[in-house]
Image (cartoon, helix red, strand yellow):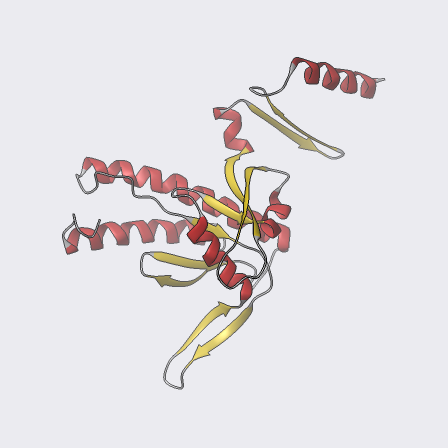
Length: 216
Protein backbone atom coordinates (compact mmCIF):
# COMPACT_ATOMS: atom_id res chain seq x y z
CA UNK A 1 0.00 0.00 0.00
CA UNK A 2 2.94 2.32 0.49
CA UNK A 3 3.33 2.26 -3.31
CA UNK A 4 -0.23 3.35 -4.07
CA UNK A 5 -0.85 5.94 -1.34
CA UNK A 6 0.59 9.37 -0.82
CA UNK A 7 2.50 9.78 2.45
CA UNK A 8 -0.27 11.91 3.97
CA UNK A 9 -2.95 9.38 3.02
CA UNK A 10 -0.95 6.47 4.41
CA UNK A 11 -0.29 8.35 7.64
CA UNK A 12 -3.98 9.17 8.06
CA UNK A 13 -5.09 5.60 7.35
CA UNK A 14 -2.52 4.05 9.67
CA UNK A 15 -3.24 6.47 12.50
CA UNK A 16 -6.98 5.85 12.19
CA UNK A 17 -6.38 2.10 12.32
CA UNK A 18 -4.02 2.24 15.30
CA UNK A 19 -6.28 4.68 17.16
CA UNK A 20 -9.29 2.40 16.77
CA UNK A 21 -7.31 -0.66 17.86
CA UNK A 22 -5.98 1.24 20.89
CA UNK A 23 -9.51 2.14 21.97
CA UNK A 24 -10.55 -1.50 21.78
CA UNK A 25 -7.46 -2.59 23.73
CA UNK A 26 -8.21 -0.06 26.46
CA UNK A 27 -11.83 -1.16 26.63
CA UNK A 28 -10.75 -4.76 27.31
CA UNK A 29 -8.15 -3.83 29.92
CA UNK A 30 -4.98 -4.48 27.92
CA UNK A 31 -1.70 -2.85 28.86
CA UNK A 32 -0.28 -1.01 25.86
CA UNK A 33 3.41 -1.82 25.46
CA UNK A 34 4.46 -0.22 22.19
CA UNK A 35 3.84 0.47 18.53
CA UNK A 36 6.21 -1.42 16.22
CA UNK A 37 5.75 0.19 12.83
CA UNK A 38 2.20 -0.75 11.84
CA UNK A 39 1.95 -3.31 14.67
CA UNK A 40 0.98 -3.14 18.33
CA UNK A 41 2.26 -5.10 21.32
CA UNK A 42 -0.22 -5.54 24.17
CA UNK A 43 -0.35 -7.71 27.25
CA UNK A 44 -2.66 -8.59 30.13
CA UNK A 45 -2.04 -9.51 33.77
CA UNK A 46 0.29 -6.65 34.71
CA UNK A 47 0.10 -4.45 36.70
CA UNK A 48 -3.15 -6.15 37.75
CA UNK A 49 -4.43 -9.61 36.87
CA UNK A 50 -7.95 -11.01 36.99
CA UNK A 51 -6.51 -14.52 36.85
CA UNK A 52 -5.04 -16.48 33.95
CA UNK A 53 -8.42 -17.63 32.60
CA UNK A 54 -9.99 -14.18 32.76
CA UNK A 55 -6.94 -12.46 31.28
CA UNK A 56 -6.82 -14.93 28.38
CA UNK A 57 -10.54 -14.46 27.72
CA UNK A 58 -10.19 -10.68 27.71
CA UNK A 59 -7.29 -10.91 25.27
CA UNK A 60 -9.10 -13.21 22.84
CA UNK A 61 -12.29 -11.15 22.96
CA UNK A 62 -10.21 -8.04 22.31
CA UNK A 63 -8.66 -9.71 19.26
CA UNK A 64 -12.09 -10.67 17.90
CA UNK A 65 -13.37 -7.12 18.37
CA UNK A 66 -10.28 -5.77 16.60
CA UNK A 67 -10.84 -7.94 13.54
CA UNK A 68 -14.50 -6.94 13.39
CA UNK A 69 -13.63 -3.25 13.74
CA UNK A 70 -11.03 -3.51 10.99
CA UNK A 71 -13.67 -4.90 8.63
CA UNK A 72 -15.81 -1.84 9.36
CA UNK A 73 -12.88 0.51 8.80
CA UNK A 74 -12.18 -1.08 5.42
CA UNK A 75 -15.68 -0.22 4.22
CA UNK A 76 -15.06 3.46 4.88
CA UNK A 77 -11.61 3.42 3.29
CA UNK A 78 -12.96 1.82 0.13
CA UNK A 79 -15.65 4.48 -0.16
CA UNK A 80 -12.97 7.16 0.10
CA UNK A 81 -10.91 5.39 -2.55
CA UNK A 82 -7.97 4.87 -0.20
CA UNK A 83 -7.69 1.12 -0.74
CA UNK A 84 -8.49 -1.25 -3.57
CA UNK A 85 -7.38 -4.44 -1.81
CA UNK A 86 -8.04 -5.91 1.66
CA UNK A 87 -6.31 -4.19 4.56
CA UNK A 88 -5.87 -7.11 6.91
CA UNK A 89 -4.18 -7.74 10.25
CA UNK A 90 -2.77 -10.88 11.82
CA UNK A 91 -3.02 -11.44 15.58
CA UNK A 92 -0.90 -13.88 17.59
CA UNK A 93 -1.77 -14.72 21.21
CA UNK A 94 0.27 -16.66 23.75
CA UNK A 95 0.02 -17.20 27.51
CA UNK A 96 2.90 -17.61 29.94
CA UNK A 97 5.24 -15.94 32.40
CA UNK A 98 7.25 -12.96 31.17
CA UNK A 99 9.86 -10.64 32.59
CA UNK A 100 8.41 -7.14 32.87
CA UNK A 101 10.32 -4.04 33.87
CA UNK A 102 12.44 -1.11 32.73
CA UNK A 103 14.97 -1.93 30.01
CA UNK A 104 17.26 0.34 28.04
CA UNK A 105 20.23 2.61 28.44
CA UNK A 106 21.22 5.20 31.01
CA UNK A 107 19.60 7.83 28.80
CA UNK A 108 16.36 6.10 27.86
CA UNK A 109 14.33 3.34 29.48
CA UNK A 110 11.23 1.49 28.29
CA UNK A 111 8.81 -0.41 30.53
CA UNK A 112 8.16 -3.57 28.58
CA UNK A 113 7.77 -7.35 28.61
CA UNK A 114 10.50 -9.66 27.34
CA UNK A 115 11.14 -13.39 27.26
CA UNK A 116 10.27 -16.61 25.52
CA UNK A 117 6.49 -16.15 25.72
CA UNK A 118 6.67 -12.71 24.15
CA UNK A 119 8.81 -14.08 21.33
CA UNK A 120 6.33 -16.89 20.72
CA UNK A 121 3.42 -14.45 20.42
CA UNK A 122 5.38 -12.58 17.76
CA UNK A 123 6.14 -15.83 15.91
CA UNK A 124 2.45 -16.80 15.99
CA UNK A 125 1.51 -13.46 14.48
CA UNK A 126 3.86 -14.17 11.60
CA UNK A 127 2.32 -17.64 11.09
CA UNK A 128 -1.28 -16.38 11.31
CA UNK A 129 -3.54 -16.07 8.27
CA UNK A 130 -4.30 -12.49 7.17
CA UNK A 131 -7.46 -11.45 8.97
CA UNK A 132 -7.05 -14.26 11.50
CA UNK A 133 -6.29 -14.93 15.15
CA UNK A 134 -3.78 -17.64 16.04
CA UNK A 135 -3.55 -19.01 19.58
CA UNK A 136 -0.89 -21.07 21.30
CA UNK A 137 -2.11 -24.23 23.04
CA UNK A 138 -1.67 -22.62 26.46
CA UNK A 139 -4.09 -19.83 25.58
CA UNK A 140 -6.60 -22.13 23.91
CA UNK A 141 -6.77 -24.34 27.02
CA UNK A 142 -8.06 -21.31 28.95
CA UNK A 143 -10.82 -20.36 26.48
CA UNK A 144 -11.81 -23.77 25.12
CA UNK A 145 -15.25 -23.65 26.77
CA UNK A 146 -16.50 -20.77 24.61
CA UNK A 147 -14.23 -20.32 21.59
CA UNK A 148 -14.58 -22.29 18.37
CA UNK A 149 -11.22 -23.05 16.77
CA UNK A 150 -9.52 -25.06 14.07
CA UNK A 151 -6.40 -26.88 15.18
CA UNK A 152 -3.57 -26.31 12.74
CA UNK A 153 -0.54 -28.43 12.00
CA UNK A 154 2.22 -27.80 14.57
CA UNK A 155 4.61 -25.14 13.31
CA UNK A 156 8.35 -24.95 13.65
CA UNK A 157 9.27 -21.36 14.50
CA UNK A 158 12.57 -19.59 14.88
CA UNK A 159 14.10 -19.81 18.36
CA UNK A 160 12.04 -22.82 19.50
CA UNK A 161 13.40 -26.34 19.40
CA UNK A 162 10.07 -28.19 19.33
CA UNK A 163 7.08 -27.63 17.01
CA UNK A 164 4.36 -25.39 18.46
CA UNK A 165 0.73 -26.47 18.58
CA UNK A 166 -1.54 -23.72 17.29
CA UNK A 167 -5.26 -23.05 17.05
CA UNK A 168 -6.96 -20.62 14.66
CA UNK A 169 -10.05 -18.92 16.08
CA UNK A 170 -13.03 -19.51 13.80
CA UNK A 171 -16.06 -18.25 15.73
CA UNK A 172 -17.11 -16.99 19.10
CA UNK A 173 -20.20 -18.93 20.15
CA UNK A 174 -22.27 -15.91 21.11
CA UNK A 175 -21.82 -14.48 17.59
CA UNK A 176 -21.81 -17.81 15.79
CA UNK A 177 -25.29 -18.54 17.07
CA UNK A 178 -26.54 -15.78 14.77
CA UNK A 179 -24.41 -16.78 11.80
CA UNK A 180 -23.91 -20.55 11.65
CA UNK A 181 -26.68 -22.01 13.81
CA UNK A 182 -24.52 -22.93 16.79
CA UNK A 183 -26.38 -23.38 20.07
CA UNK A 184 -24.26 -22.78 23.16
CA UNK A 185 -25.81 -22.93 26.63
CA UNK A 186 -24.18 -23.34 30.01
CA UNK A 187 -25.13 -23.09 33.64
CA UNK A 188 -24.13 -24.71 36.91
CA UNK A 189 -23.52 -28.40 36.27
CA UNK A 190 -23.75 -28.44 32.48
CA UNK A 191 -22.37 -27.08 29.20
CA UNK A 192 -24.12 -27.74 25.87
CA UNK A 193 -22.79 -26.86 22.41
CA UNK A 194 -24.66 -28.00 19.30
CA UNK A 195 -23.76 -27.18 15.69
CA UNK A 196 -27.09 -27.63 13.93
CA UNK A 197 -25.41 -27.76 10.52
CA UNK A 198 -23.21 -30.73 11.48
CA UNK A 199 -25.06 -32.80 14.08
CA UNK A 200 -26.39 -36.13 12.80
CA UNK A 201 -29.87 -37.56 13.33
CA UNK A 202 -28.36 -40.32 15.50
CA UNK A 203 -26.56 -37.77 17.68
CA UNK A 204 -29.83 -35.85 18.13
CA UNK A 205 -31.57 -39.07 19.18
CA UNK A 206 -28.87 -39.82 21.78
CA UNK A 207 -28.97 -36.24 23.07
CA UNK A 208 -32.74 -36.39 23.51
CA UNK A 209 -32.36 -39.72 25.33
CA UNK A 210 -29.81 -38.28 27.74
CA UNK A 211 -31.99 -35.26 28.48
CA UNK A 212 -34.99 -37.54 28.98
CA UNK A 213 -33.02 -39.66 31.45
CA UNK A 214 -32.06 -36.55 33.38
CA UNK A 215 -35.71 -35.66 33.67
CA UNK A 216 -36.37 -39.01 35.37
